[in-house]
Image 1 (spheres, rainbow, N blue to C red):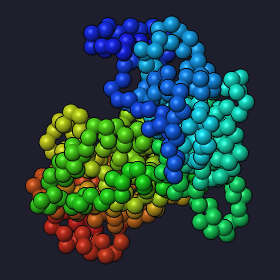
Image 2: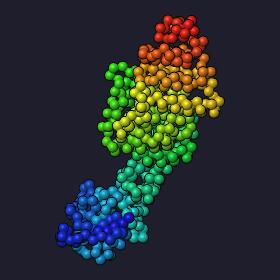
Image 3: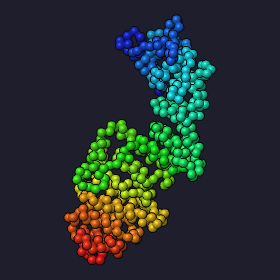
Image 4: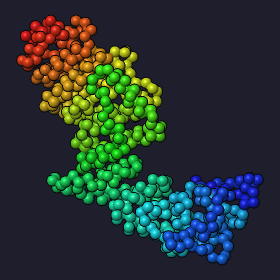
Amino acid sequence: MKSLQVAQATDPESQPERTDQVSDKSIVIPNKHVTIADSIKSEHSRFVAPRIPTDFSIQVQETTYNVHKYPIISKCGYIGRLEVQPLISNSGNVLKLDNFPGGSETFETILKFCYGLPIDFNSDNVAALRCASEFLEMTEELEDGNLISKTEAFLTFVVLSSWKDTVTVLKSCENLSPWVENIQIVRRCCDSIALKASKNKHTSEDATSNQESWWFNDVATLRIDHFMRIISAIKAKGIKPETIGKCIMQYAKRWLPGMYEELEGLRGYGHEKSNLQFTIFGRKKQESAAHSKEQTTIIESLVSIIPTQQEAVPCKFLLQMLKMAMMYSVSPALISDLEKRVGMVLEDAEVNDLLIPRYQNRDQGKMVNMPNSPEDCTMQDIDVVQRIFEYFLMHEKQQMQLQQKSGKLNRLMDNYLAEVATDPNLSITKFQVLAELLPEYTRSFDDGLYRAIDTYLKTHPSLTDHDRRRLCKIMNCEKLSLDACIHAAQNDRLPLRTIVQSK
């Protein structure tokens, strides 16, 4: 979209503004004037304007440059085309360049080039100069060695051959959209970084981690959309999923610091721990809406590029991402996808990883999936863990591997049950559903299940005899060890029938 605005220099307040829609560059009366002698200078000298008076004014941002027409229009096709228009060629008008790539600093460098002064290309300014030269149409048709060709040559032969320069240029592109996309600077930089990062993909098994991850820190400093493009390019070059996963984890560590905060009060539900949810979200409410949106975008983007291979990232990382996704209320589809991925590698989880707080919806001020019954207002989200175990069982039954992994999963479930059993708000139905998720035939011993049941009975002393018997039916007394049987025989919290069976 291009537009032109014209105003007379006599009295800008009294003259109505006239517009002709052709470009996002316009002609207006400026607030601040700078002569060419003021704007063009080098480290040790100042360019002195010739005695020929300036005959043209160009405004970029809040600064207006009084320049000589010929040096500018001889190299800038866009300004040359505008200058011939009657309203603009009138000496009382000023050309305003709206949305100029790189702003006034870049334009001053352009002026130096137009006046024949030497300019220094470097990785910090070349992207802005390349975009500005495209904006001004500084092509070879106007003059051999014009700025488009010079910046292109520097990008191609200097920047893209250097890892450090390529990363620097890519960072400088963050404020130059959409120009950097249109002239494909971002694509070329991402492809160059991916190519350099993939050169060590065939390293031997005994290669050090430093050899595989030397590029992680640099790409972790990039904006999320640029990082995603690099990861996509790297995947296409055949880098191992584990390496890509480690890079994603490094990025998350930098941009999602909340993932690695230890939240106090997740274990145990004594005094001063009943307000855990509100403590968590008291901190979240202090975040600005922009920051929350940025965190949500990063979470959704990272989840979308995690390799599908199970060995790509550890189960602990997936669970950390799941907690962050729930904290920032990302889409239910993404949360469901994470739950399924965790279920596929659940045997690698630890109990602490499964202690997921019941997060509050920060927009509505309500608890996510908050049950209607007060007795089900658990501090931890039992439903999420239940779904994860169900996904695991479904996956393992398809793979016919449930029996091989049953021992580790039973220990995980029993330890988790023992943890959540200390929650006074955990209903007996919810506890029972969890305890019966894993098939009885997969259990060799029920000692862990007995410990969890006993913990629940201790936390809920007001249970009726019927409910106590209901709980104890979950375990098989014949699968208790001798020590567990001795403890059960002396446990007055158990129903009498269970005590007799355990003797």
